Length: 88
Image 1 (cartoon, rainbow, N blue to C red):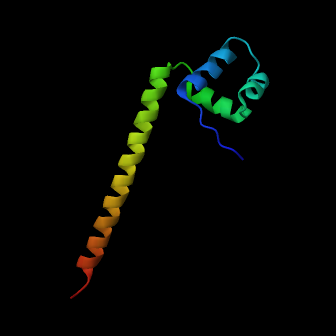
Image 2 (tube, helix red, strand yellow):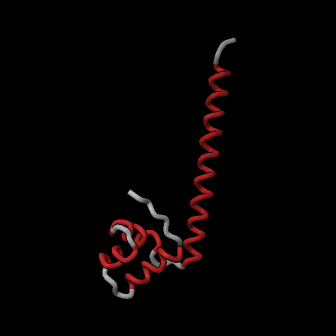
Image 3 (spheres, one colour):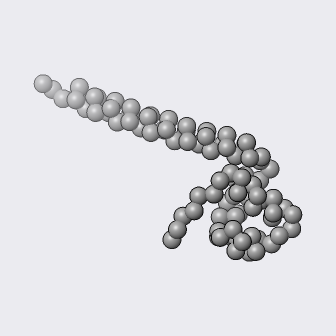
């Protein structure tokens, strides 16, 4: 299955088209996406502007990086505790 990446503008265009009265199955055929994708976008992005969506994606990426850093530090701490626990 091909995973397409939609830009923030495309996502907002799809949501605005749906608000204007175009039916969901027609939108999905027009933009080549599944209905669950539309409903996920609607749940996540409804009521936002393009700049809000960009900011949200940037914050999610930053959060992902910070979580990776914390996980790496936790592994380092656990390894050091294990080394220190051994009787030399």
